[in-house]
Structures are given as C-alpha cells and as structure tokens.
Image (cartoon, rainbow, N blue to C red; front, side, top):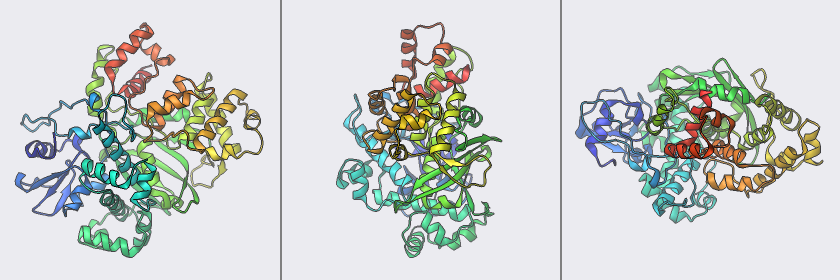
Length: 532
C-alpha cells in the first residue's frame, strides 16, 4: 500500500485509528494545514486531502503543522525489516469499508538498521536501511550536524549516494528533513515550555536567531512569538527544567517495562519510583564539551505519550536526550503489527502474548554492557550492587534535584584512562578479575570504534564481534545487541527463564518454535520472561 492509494489512506484517516499514527500525514488543501491521522478536527472532504509519508514531505509541499493534533508529537517509525520478513498488517479500520492495510510496505519496520546489506536481503533493503539510519542520525543530532558530507562520511557513503537513497525513501532531501526536525522540535518547545525564543532556536539546532525566525516564517507563515500566542498553552516548566511529550502507539505496558528496569537500576545513576523513571545523563555538545544533568520520564496514558522532564544543563543536547529516551522506552514500536505474529503464542498458554509489551533499550550502551557483564552467573541484585560501586568510585559526581541521583556512569574512555590496572581497581570493589578484564577489553574496543554498540549498528554483526572478546558468550552478546542496537529478533535460547517458560520442550523444539515468531523474537522473549 502506498500514499498513491487515496481511498485506503482516507479510510485510515477517517477511522482515527492510533495504529496509523506516525505512518503518514494528511495535508488539507482547503486550510493549508497538515495533520496526523488521529486528528480530531472536523473531517475534511476526500478531494481536499493529500497524503504524505513524512512531515518533511508535507512541509515541502507548503502545508503547515496542525495546532490541534501537533504532528511533532507523532510516534516515529523504526528501521526497515528485510523484504523476506515483512509481516503485512491484516487489520482493517472500523469504517464500514473493506480497504486493505493503509501503511506503506516500506514502513513495515523494526528498530535495527545498518547501511550494509543483510544476508538474504535485496539491495533495495540496504538502501532503505541506509536512508532510515540517516534519518535517525538527523533526528538525534539535528543540533550538531554541520553538513551532509559529514553525515555521509559517518555512514560510509558519499553525499551524492545518500541524497539519492534518502529521496527515494522519504521523498525529500536530507537537508529538508533536517530542517523539519529542527522546526518541529522548536514548535514543541514554544508550545510546552517557557524558554525564550533565542533559547528555543539554540536548543533546536539553529545557528542563529535570525535564521530560525526566517525559516519559521517561511514554513509556517507566522513568527515564533505569534505561534506561542495562538496555542495559548499553559507553560509546563519546573524551575529551569522543561517538560516535553513523546508520543507512542498504544497499547503501551508502561508498568511492566518499569518492572523490568527497576531491579536493574544502578544506584546513584537510575531510580524507578512512583511510576516514573529517573536517571543522570552525560552527553557531548557540538563543541566537544560534556554536559551533565538528569531526566524524568512518566506515562501520560490519556495522551498516548511520555512526559519527559529535562534539567536545564541538557538543553544544549536536547535532541540527543529525546532520541535516547525513545530508544530506551521503545517508543517507535508498532505493537499491533507485532501482536499479529506473536498471537500464535496464545496456543501455548492463554494470556502469554500481552499486547503493548515493549523491549527495553538503553540510554547509555556502555553502562548497560558493564551492568550485563557484572550480572554473569550472579543475581540481578548482586549485579546492581556492583554496578553502583563502579558508578560511585569511577563515575563523575553530579548535583541534581532528585534525591538518590548522585553520579553519572563512567564512559569507556574513563575506564581506558585509569592509571592503575583495571583488574586491580575493579577488584577492590568485589569484581572478579575475569569480569574486570572483560570490561577493560570491551571499553577499549568501544573507545577506538572497532565495535559499535549503538542503534544503527548491525545487531547480528555486533553480537558476533562481542563474542570474540574473552568473557562474552552468546547470551551476553545477544542481550547487549538487543538492548543497545534495538534488535527486534534476538532470541536467547540458552536463557534459564526461556527454558523454564517453555518447559518441558528440548532445545531443538524451542528453536523450532521460536522460528514462528520472527522477526519479533525479542518481544516474544519479553512475554516469556514476564510470564514467569
């Protein structure tokens, strides 16, 4: 299904079904406004609707964002599943029509991506993966990307090739997409915070106030201050901190996700309490300087969104913060599409497949990796205690407004820069030499870039590289890749919990059973763990 299928897209728009939110946008020619498919404004006539794949494409066509449904709050789309694994959506919106699925096939996506062609994938999949990864980089680093050449070089291709594949996938140029990312972030800040227009311009990645004002007026036909007056929203600031909303597609099992993160929260670095998640943050600004602060995330189910509170020092790296929050809480997930495949789990045990279950990502890949290594062959509580000691002894103290948040976790470079042997320093904390040496080796590989443990890296390749390091086996490598690289199809068949949940099946039977759950085996694992 493509945007050219006007009748199908209009039926999806007419249904106001949240399953389609973020998959396309609707430009209304009679008003010059573009909306999300869940917009509750009066339904326009079909002949007045034009459908676009992205907000950037709608803005390039001259449409302005709707002030009611706020396109900047639409959930994002994750990277492309190889063509051999596309799971077509069979759901039909309840509109009285019998139209086919509304979501374009090119948007049936998982969270993993890599510019390389995966085994068994056609070249077109490699192009799509490259375009999707570039879009993610543009969104996360819209405040620091200086040129298309810089972005292309980081992705291992030429600027010309990147322009071509990006336009084929998103129907706009990378520069136009970047401008829309910045403008929509600015619009959200103007609506939801009390930041000055200058602060909004800087936080959104514009190099100057004049450039921001000029582009804002050209795209939206009003000034930033006029937009703020028109929205009339109450300012939701807490002291000097700001709060923004990040949308998701329901259902969303927030409490079950917090239940996974809570026992693994590193003392001093993370806290889960009162149905909210808190953590310290350290990120690098455009000029190479580090900034530290804290964030809080809480669910606002009535709006299908998380409210993310960000401390003032992190405004300089706001796009990075928001991108990492999206990955940590799996906000780009399409639960209905996943549930169609995993519904087969119900034949094993009623209630085993829970719609809305998410796969937890991570905010800091090295932090998560260290915590995982420390957890080998000991309890979750024991590993959490050891990780807290590492944060306290080797991390950086940070002052926050949140009781219990005291340190940022050390970076890979911090570990590599220790003057004394890592085994000795970590050994004093109760960490055995084998674990300490594994952490030291991994830190070196991440610091020099020979291993990329991040969203956008090929998860299977990353897992294979990790298993070459002493002290990292298949379970540890697969778990790290799942959480750091957004691997939707990880399956840890040797896991004790998986074996227990699927008992009395043998290993071969478990592998055969799990094949039915591709490419969402990571979500199947979360359901199995949750069932225990």
